[in-house]
Amino acid sequence: MNVAGWRRTAIALSCVAWMAAPALAAEPARLSGYNADIRESSISGISSGAFMAVQFGTAWSSVIKGVGVVAGGPYWCARADANDIMNGYTLPILTATGSCMKGPPREMNHSFEKAAAKSASGDIDPLQFVARQKIYLFHGYNDAVVAKSVTDAAADFYRHYLGEANRGNLYYQTTVGAGHSLAVAPDKQVEGLNDCQVNAAPFINKCGYDQAGIILQHVYGALNPPNRGPLTGTIKRFEQSLYTRPDDPGRLSLDQAGFVFVPGECEQGAACRVHIALHGCRQNVGTIGRRFIDDTGYNAWADSNRLIVLYPQTTASSFAPFNPQACWDWWSYVNHADNYVTKSGAQIRAIKAMLDALTAGAAPAAAVPPTGAPKPLKVIDTSDTSADLAWTPLAATTAYRIFRAGADGPFTVVADVAGPSFADSGLTPRTAYRWRVSPIVNGAEGPTSNEAPATTRSAPAPCQKPGTCPIGQ
Image (cartoon, rainbow, N blue to C red; front, side, top):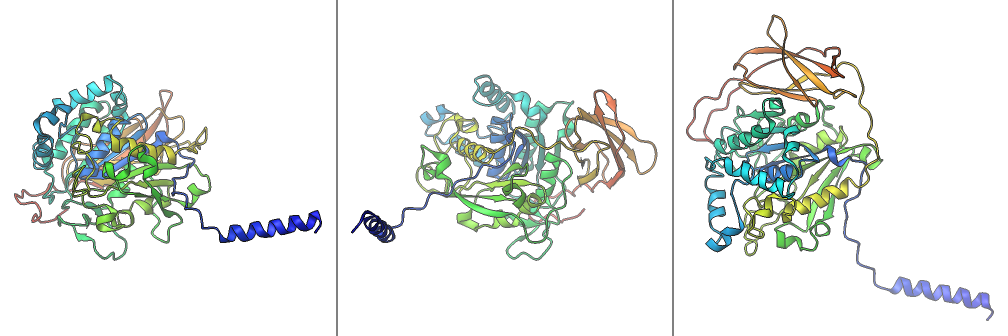
């Protein structure tokens, strides 16, 4: 046999050996890096996810531009500390399930002092970044799990840092009759969702209130309408173990798998942004399947607005750590120390690693928004005493001037605000108003927007037993 024959025989034998060899183990599913600026990221959550959203948004306030808090409380509410280990570690659990749920929370000075200390040590970002965040808070008046005084305390926490200059960054909705849930307004019949006032799994309630869309627009300004048809994007499963190293996910009460929704345009390299959506206790995939991922409305808004939605997942654990309801760690059940509210907190560190992975493909410069008058200005939500305004951001704009008028009569200046949303507060219930907005560029006021009218809601009637309160507008 000549050399060529030997070569052909060797190749054939190699192929046979390769075909007979056992298949290699599949590479763990990783998060891809997209053209997404990490500084355009945002986060929201319900219940324990809301507490975690506050913790993460405060720890990483330099990159988190907005926070959505649904039935959650203030930073360091449970006040877990290393000293609690010496006391059998019962106080944080009792506080978390006591005053941090049933209310009222302990004095807010403790939260401010902890945040200041952690900021001074570099364990969280400088608190000046919190002052520029867009904050959405929600308490349904049929919520029988978390008391209104707890979410009131979260509002107090943010108002402390926002101050009068940025008061319009915070919108607080308390006039929707939701139970303990994320409220939705499905455009079609979806089986398994609760009526609005219910306090039960899957904690997703039909209230005719599109909470996901309001949160996203309060953070980012007016968005394209949600895609109510077949989505262009896909939901991908990934291995959370790649982002919890050196810890195993179970050690942190995190599931092996997390999920992410990626719009088709983001897959093709378009400039996108990332929103992190955190489920609450007993809302993880292991408990209710993909209900939180599929039915809360985030994906429809994300699909038409180049938003990537990250859905990290917890898991229930009955031993160490003790977390039988798959809650996020907001009382330090992982390591019984106070770093759970900092960048080095085990779950915060894992979520940040996921966010870093998703934003790893960011281009040097993002697309420049259009210039001209802000449009379209729209009222995305109203409460009894507030209205939430949003519009399209404009290039080179240093601030926006907000004008308000009654049902008729002249407009007057309400405030100047940075960013394309504003929560106008101090309004009268059941009253008609109109708004306009103008950009301010280098101190000069530009053309005004369209006029956006709305009527504030009625104040909820007094009710002593949440879950039974009548629902009205």
